[in-house]
Image 1 (cartoon, rainbow, N blue to C red):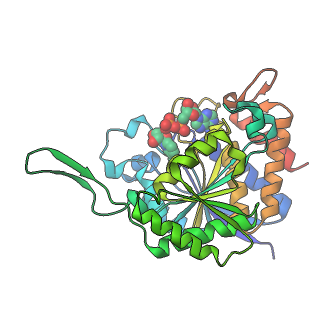
Image 2: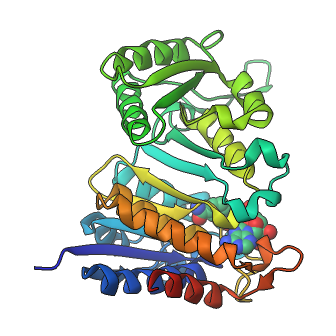
Length: 360
Ligand code: NAD
């Protein structure tokens, strides 16, 4: 019997549906090549779901996501929904999906494809062959800690506060994710904290070291977040896997990914629960939506991560990465990564080119 996978497709808003359409071409092509069966269930999310059903994450969308083997999301948000109540904004769907699917670890590779080495703002020798993975804790820390809010002091002035909190269990599980993925890479983990100032990240450092005792094949180093931010632009190739808290990870993963210079190229995975979620790191890009200008490669590479992390098929991820690399080597570019003497193609043509490389 053929292997069968159910994938929830959540295209969302702006360029979301355009890039998901190209990822679907890739999935249908893989279905033929690998002789597998893929059930693709498409449901609305974000602004599209708000328009259709009055909520950015309708119950049916959540059900379809929860019962799938993996979720592929495009992007959500746009100017049209900027003025509606905070709780109904398209971006709230992301938080809802992460918490319901129990996705406590966000994996963000920052990889430089040889053909795009000049897209980085750093010198070529600093970034060629760069391959970093940031593992960000996603469901705890200061973004979720209580108490939080803004109150008024007795003198009438206002005070804002948030709470940075991590339990030992939360630190242990994210540390394990980092050490496990490092095992499949170059076996080096840098754990990032601010242990010199924040007690909670002192605990983070202690617990990560304790978990490390179960992984004697992995080299662990601790680094303060300010130093890490500096080292990422000074000598980025010193890193393999970086593991850190929700807020530090939010900032450092953006910094690391921008070393590659191409937002349209970067995939991500959010894992931890039964069903993982895969998405490009970019947003809905309302400025280019509907114009055939969106780069679908981040979403196509997210499909690769899905095969690697959800379906245990690392070789399929390699196959997709190689197909993307060949297309880039031929000088094929969407506008965002276009440079001198390269051939500009539309979103759809880029998808077609990847498929034809896969099917070679
Ligand atoms: P953005 O990532 O959508 O766009 C930033 C810039 O990069 C724009 O100039 C855009 O044209 C370009 N760009 C992004 N993806 C591209 C692609 N695949 N190909 C070519 N160019 C691409 O970020 P933004 O403008 O800050 O946000 C726009 C909307 O997206 C907002 O509503 C924001 O809240 C939302 N957003 C959603 C997600 C998500 O769904 N995960 C993430 C970030 C932002």
